[in-house]
Length: 91
Image (cartoon, rainbow, N blue to C red):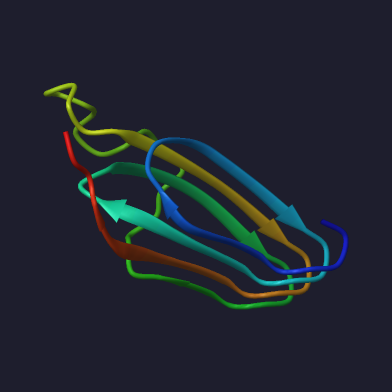
């Protein structure tokens, strides 16, 4: 988006690639998922309940049962918030 907030309540798996020029980004990640993240805000704050790294999810997907999530988040003028959701992964 050019000017607007982006919100994903519960990412379960896959890649979330979100970009906005002027707006906040808020992403909820389900508990139990393996996460790799890359987030950048030029003129805003980044807050995350989850440690972020630009590398593969720590430990890899050894059991094959945990979903993998990759976050790519960019904003020029806005805040980025990443948090765990209360939604749980079910088989």
